[in-house]
Image (cartoon, rainbow, N blue to C red):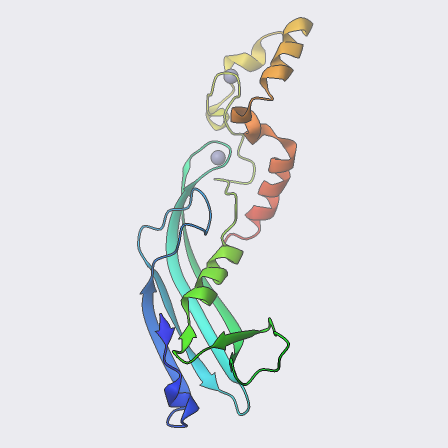
Length: 189
Ligand SMILES: [Zn+2]
Ligand SMILES: [Zn+2]
């Protein structure tokens, strides 16, 4: 949505509230599904010399555990404040700190999408210590050990197993991904 900034520019208002439904683009993240549009709300306020945007997003989304593929549903409320300036009022040098609006008004979709993009984790876990699926038989190890673990491994077969584990389908057992999961856990709300 493009917010008409005229009421602030001509002095007839000091605040312009807004509220609308926004459908996120596909760029947000893979495996993230929004069952309903994102509610975007807030206001632009004239703060004697500059303008401030306060923008909130309310939404839920569906995804799956990166290790065991269990469905995950999350609800989020996010808020951001940004300084706003008209494109003609800024100096030559681009200032990334400002949201710039043109003659038509201020594009609210852009800061809304950025807020989602920055805050939705790239990877989700159903729980911090999810055991994931066995790369051998595909069993959900959260439900108990599978028979693969009990088999005594022939050293020659172990080498074969290491080769098989380089298959991209087993990347959920990659150690670096496991570390990422711990970071994601702290962003849960
Ligand atoms: Zn899981
Ligand atoms: Zn197994």
